[in-house]
Image 1 (tube, helix red, strand yellow):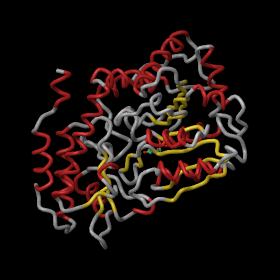
Image 2 (image 1 turned 90 degrees about the vertical axis):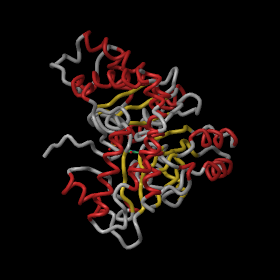
Image 3 (image 1 turned 45 degrees about the vertical axis):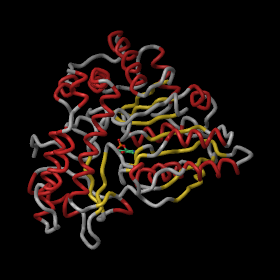
Length: 395
Ligand SMILES: *Cc1c(COP(=O)(O)O)cnc(C)c1O
């Protein structure tokens, strides 16, 4: 059943009416000049959102997970070593994907709720004098725990160790909602998908590769076929695709980058910060805690909320779906049953967030948690009332 209620899961996110219409296009021959003309402005828009001047943009008909796979198979060879931290379900899955491809992963284990440890990365890189480590993998925003890591600090760690490894960043739940500075941070490979910050249906894996990553791609020997950059590039040079691309999603991606740039990237990031801060104040008013260990790790795109010990957080998500037709995120992996998640990325407004908080309160009261109706909503209202600076600027 479909309802008009917004979703509060951290992907897929709510699709604005403007983007739903944009994706609805008649069949277009993807070997036609009209399709070839569409591509450069799309890639330019993505580059701008990522704050990159010269990154190579590669888009596959796939999802973020395929983006991870494309990133490693196009840049690494069998037996190569990579360095990664495991501190949530998404960092865990990327590590497992590497292992299935025969890549040796040096894993730094961190408690779930912590971020990527720049200091531990630096120590591991400094020890690797022979430069056996070919890439450092970082999950910018750990969607399972609501933790944002400091990518600039990881870049400083690489530089301090004088290490040439590629810096690969999973930005699936950050890009286009939280500031991402591909060039400033020296990111070599950034990965996202269409259904998160870009507010589109699922179906596009979006990658950005630095010139250094593209040089690595010229000699990388991991097997790849569908996700081979060389094939995509060869076809793109002729203004086409090696297989049938979802043209409607490409049109949607162009429109999405226009929406983001019309609002202004800094305004988009400020909006997400304000909405998230209101959610965090609601959580505090409920007497609950976030999974994120410290305020500097708080994610502006998803809040993972710890429930009292002994209570099954999945009951909240199930009850919300059943009684109020509203989607919240469940806990994943190590925090399954211990947290529920409120996603607030992509198309989200103060008013939408308030409806989610109000619904969460009804659910928690229904299932017997000691939450006073209106307490979190009031805390968020007080914060949102203070002003919506982005609206003033773009009016
Ligand atoms: C959603 C998500 C993924 C997986 O993306 P899919 O599009 O579902 O394959 C990977 N990493 C992070 C951080 C995510 O939030």
